[in-house]
Length: 328
Ligand code: ACO
Image (cartoon, rainbow, N blue to C red; front, side):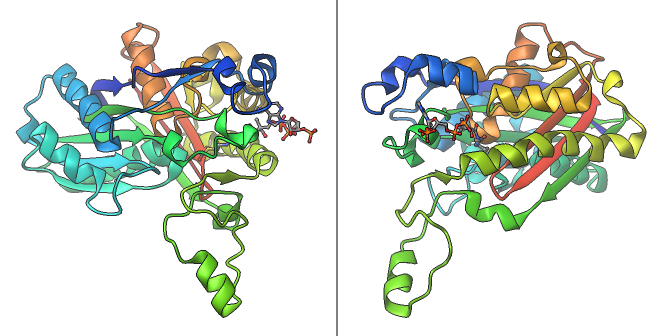
């Protein structure tokens, strides 16, 4: 059993930050950021909570799908930057959208979150035959976790939200989810304020180098190495289940972290760059939002068309990776 995307939506904060804006507070320049990452500008949430951005994207996806919110059986929200430890973003979106009959929960698989959610949604639709529609929402405000004094990380990320309404279909769907927790210390942001106390009072070092709360830390080079292998791996793990090759794919929709990571993945897959959707130049890395946002934008522009075969491939903190192949 497969899935059909009935509608998509997005929300983007008005505030734009160009590469030149960063030169006001870190030692960087437009040329370095463009050539090393492919990013030119990104959106930054101002007053908007993550759940608000997610709800706006969800409303658009529901409207486009042309369904009644009461018919949604499940809301899954993907985010690594929740406003609250609890309630979940999914519960807040459920309320905001009037999806009163839906169960709701969040997944946190960082930038792989949308593909993790899609895989999960398909399983629910397969086993719960009474469920008609699943709403998947990805929403992030990474800017609230960035260290704007760290030039190697703050220039990479952006904020926003994207959503999709899906139903079951009889078209093929294959997916693969994976994780390597040994890389957990390579990319993280702390949430709980005990690390320094534990270290000082109990002489226990948890091994996560950045001790400050809510500040994103990453070992860029190690994450880069992981990412270039993870994207082809995510594709092959999903594709091999159905004997699919890169030639069968019309559009690869990769996680939008760095153009060089996407180019290396394309090379490793033996697929032309023309088949890869790229939006990171104008949105930066929006974590779990990047794949559904690229999907939404390409559908809106008429680039991705009904009947075309898509490969969504992601990697992220955790470390995680995920791939899903299906027909739009
Ligand atoms: N402007 C100018 N110079 C910079 C900047 C900047 N913004 N950032 C770093 N540099 C400097 C470094 O200090 C270094 O200088 P040095 O040689 O004097 O020490 C030099 O540029 C080269 O640094 P590298 O780290 O080797 O640069 P690299 O080409 O590897 O690019 C980057 C760094 C962009 C972070 C890259 O490693 C990368 O993209 N990594 C993956 C990051 C990623 O995808 N993270 C998200 C994962 S998804 C998720 O779940 C959030």
